[in-house]
Length: 224
Image 1 (cartoon, rainbow, N blue to C red):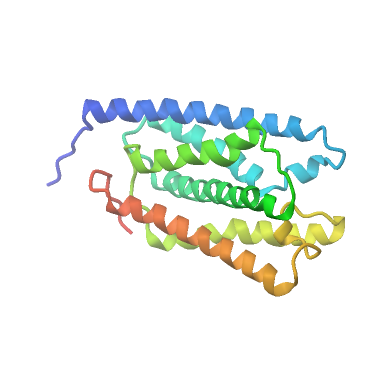
Image 2 (cartoon, rainbow, N blue to C red):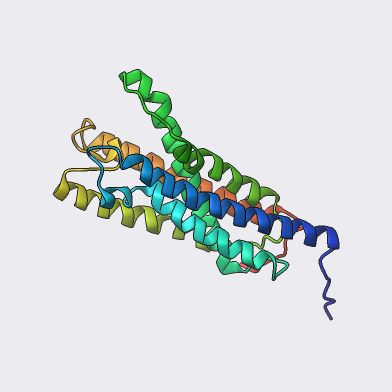
């Protein structure tokens, strides 16, 4: 016979606090997306369609939705359901990888005598929001275990996005990132090296996030 235990008042307060934090960060994400859109309106090469094809913008938009749902459930449930944990794992992986890739591009821009301006909106999307997502994943209570068999799900979006981006790029002559542009890489090998490395990092990040859910003793167990 199992005895049901109620969460402690301290843990309940902590979960509510993170619920509030998630709601605030979701609002910040919306403001940052709108601000970034307004910022690039001033570029002569700006295209509304191009803006919405960036991996960063799509992943952050999805992250806003997941954060909002996570905030709402933080006030209603002691733990996050399995489907939300999977959604959080996916969006967390994508927002973190966006920050890593953007950080590498900015850091290496000087080597090519190219200056990249990082407005406040871009700083929020690439650095501050991913940082919060990491803290939330590591510290926030109410996390349940994610089965390892769900790891492969993290590859669906990058592969679909990449395929669409390459096909569209060949038609319109524009690519959101230099390493996808055939005109800016030395050939198929360099393209494959960049793409393969990013996919490996994505899988590694997702695996790390899943591992954390399975090692923390105070989290609610989940079969799988």
